[in-house]
Amino acid sequence: MRLDLEPIRSVAKPKHKRKSRKRADRGKFTDPIRKKIKEHFQHTCQECGGRGHHCHHVKPKGSGVGRGVFTNGLLLCKRCHDAIHNELDQTRLKYWQNVFKEQYGIHYFRDKEDLERISWERRKRVEDLYDE
Image 1 (cartoon, helix red, strand yellow):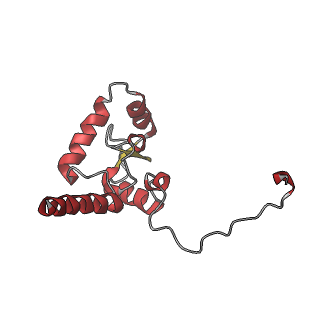
Image 2: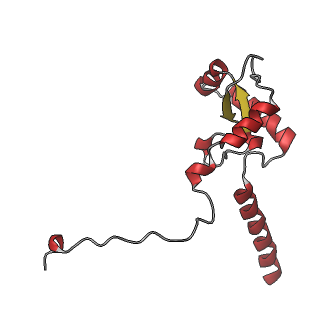
Image 3: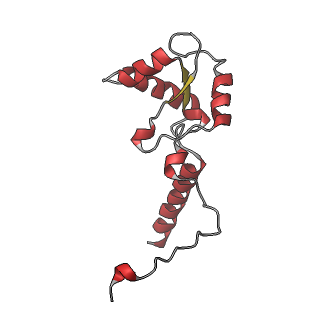
């Protein structure tokens, strides 16, 4: 039997919603969060004091853990945003990571799903200690 002669069957889409957002989407700032960041920083670039338009991830998405949450957003102008991205030693980025860590805590870059997973893992470790 030749496989190329058989009809192609389509697979029905599941009728349930995803339990969590896709990983790629969790790193993006939504429009309401962008608005909240801009209002929080009063539309001012936090590097030079000019007009800020760009919401920058303090903990980068590329690190695999930087999420699009308010506590991970820094408002910058285009020139300062480009400068932070082009800086090889990441001095400015590390400075802002320390500022945000002091201001919001060590989990400033995580979203609700990350925090729930961390909490679950901690509970599981404690349960495992009692089971030994």
